[in-house]
Structure formats: structure tokens, C-alpha cells
Image 1: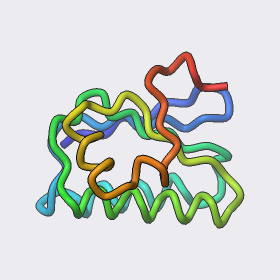
Image 2: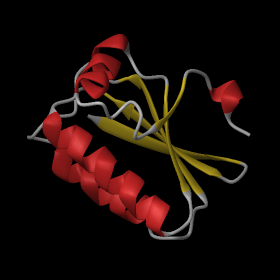
Image 3: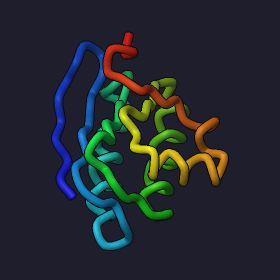
Image 4: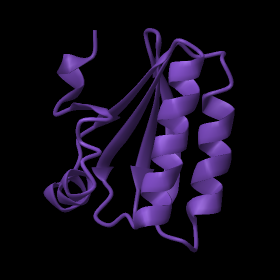
Length: 107
């Protein structure tokens, strides 16, 4: 797994590349914790290049969403593959997250 950062206006975009699972979720949690420290009004997780995510990765995203909500910020998921989206739907988390299909939807 590799994570790249970039800013687009008020959005801090984290682009994840690779599989997210129990073996590397610690790195994702560390980066999400830093990104959701209150210095960013909006954190966007670009998942275009994530082809697999297990429950530990989903748990990290849930923690990021809760933290940003507590800070009054936005936590958005972007470009989710069908496989990962199906996992979110099975857990009814597709209603918990704000999911964007395209970067053009960022305001």
C-alpha cells in the first residue's frame, strides 16, 4: 500500500494505492490520524487504486469519519471500486460515508 497527499482548495486528498488489510492498516491509521488532527476542514480518501480492503481498513475509515465529524469537518470517499463499495453496502456503511464518484463533485 502506498499513500500520496495533495491539496485541492480546502480539501486534503489522500490517494491510496494497493490493498488495505490487517498487515498494513497501521500505516493507514497513522496517516488518517495526522490528517484528521483539526488542521484540515475536509479530508478526501481517493480509493481509485484500492482493489481490496478488509474489515480493518474499513474500521480505519470509520474512525476517520467519526473524528472529522466531531471536529466539524468533512470526510469524503472518492472513486471507490465496485468490490470495495459492495463491502460497504453489505455493512450498510454506504449510508454512513459521503461517497463521491468523481473529483469534479468536490466543491
